Image (cartoon, rainbow, N blue to C red; front, side, top):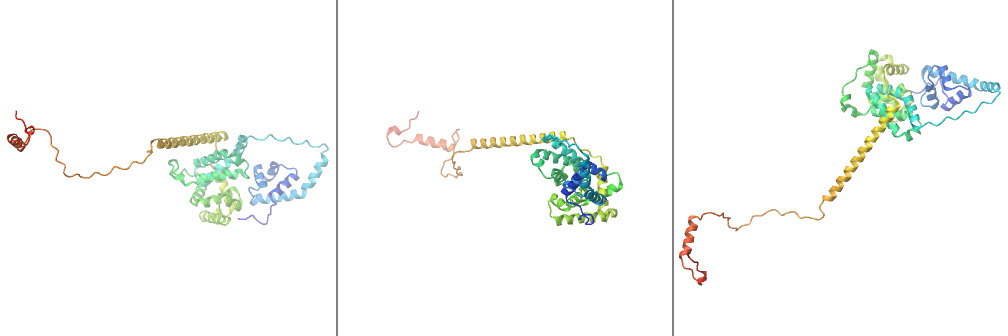
Length: 356
């Protein structure tokens, strides 16, 4: 898992110095190696490290430039009699232009990487778009980051590996596998690995990061990342013995990612979608805050301002005569009235009832 000591590489600044001392551009150097110009840029920036035959060819070419570079420079200086005009400084890019350049450089490859990580085409596109939307919202922070591509890649991987996708109806059923039998076997082995092992394998053997960078992006220690990578390779070699060689595994991962026709959205579409999403959540937060303030004000308005003691529970009262309803007198009541009228009352005459 460490670079081959038989082919030592100079540090990234020395690689750039040797190329510039030989008056070669990155595209010219890439043409001599048979690779893309952005790969040379990544090597000179220290983001990735060449491996296998590309490493041997790169080491040999840098050794040749270190021997012949100064002589070529002197000869060119003698041949040029007139001083070269000073380069005109390029106009600074606007934030939108810088974002579009980063998106055009990273999005196509990142969609294919995320597809290997999840095995789902639509989820891969969605994860990359959400990562770039978040990058556009935090563009002042991402623009000055040491590795903007790594920042976006980490966000895309985090969104793609979220466990909440299993509860979404659109992602409950598996997608159709690749058409080739070898691709189906490799994709099946990858998806059976734990997500942490799959991420470490993809970053190291797929993207080409070294072990410390893989550990930093996976937010794990270097020994833990090395263990995950080792177990992932062992699991793949047990199912697919022809992929026991890391260089062959790297080649097969690249072929599997390139066979799928995965297209990312256009940069303006991603930017406008992110701005629309940000406006929606901002308005939702404002509406929720206003509703909370209104509920609080209504509660303060209708709340009691003094203490009201509770009503005591009821108790039985004894000695109260029964309540009588109006109506005809009973037999006993009629006899009592007749008796009182018939007898002469004792006492003053004014108390004697009059009979009519």
